[in-house]
Image (cartoon, rainbow, N blue to C red; front, side, top):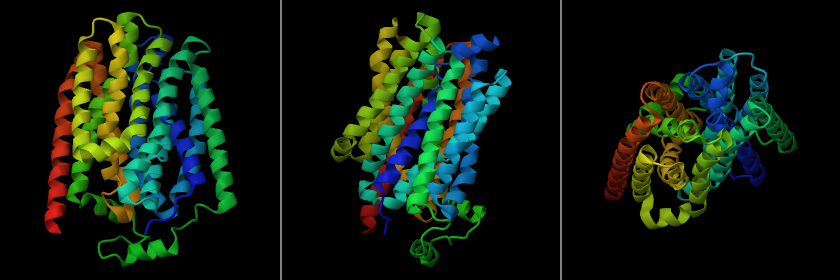
Length: 411
């Protein structure tokens, strides 16, 4: 049986997720300022994004097993304090190389927050309500995305790009301290999982003992055919969608002359679209089901990236970014829900491996897109996304439909 979710813990985890997404997306509108500050191209400045993504993905392999053994809330609280330290260091970086290193450190510490919060929800909420609750968590993450994409440009145009990292350090410090106080108040995160749950894991015929090592937990996930499919889809999604959206602000700034603040504000509409999705997700899920939701999300993404690639005026980016956020989370939230169910007995490891795949894809995508932007243009990146994402979404939706029919026939 799932454990009972604490509203206070969920609120604190959501605050941490908000801060994590803010720091994740804050560099998107900062690229022109960083390129100017360090006298490099936009593609080279994008190392601050790819370094974050690589570290974020790789550290998933550490946090998942740690969370399964020591408790998800406890591990997240330590990671949040680590984010405070690394953001503070980034604010005083003396060179681009140091900034890239501190961004990698931030990615490595932020890596624990959202995936382990998802896993915590997976432990606490039944599958029939899980996508709805994950959509509520999505509200916090997309607001963080909006703030990051908008505030990065505003800070760069007013107080300077360094000030945004100092502000993020303060946000993480407050969040981390509140989480540690909550642990002290309620003993929310014990050094071990509850005894009943450990016993259930040990007794389950396909389960993994609570003291299992990293390799055994990882093998439990990889041995699941559906888990391998979900991980493959997440790699492609990260490579195509995240990298394409990352270059929208710099494209608007360089081609249409928008200030960094306005370019960041336009991309922030992507977060507004995601927030709207989080409010209407239960209705859309009930009407279209998981397959229909993913399929329609892919169609929307194909249309909006085609618009971004061909638009003659920056005004077209306003509805495109809003619809892009809506379409992306129609696909991504469905993928997240299946990630929480890939291997329930080692859910922390499974969800962390999902995030590892997602951000491994993102790091590859940003590197490839940076080359394309420097040698061709961002329009070529948008055009590629307009073709690839609908194909990916329709393929994933078809596999979900096959699984649903197979489950029904097996009953």
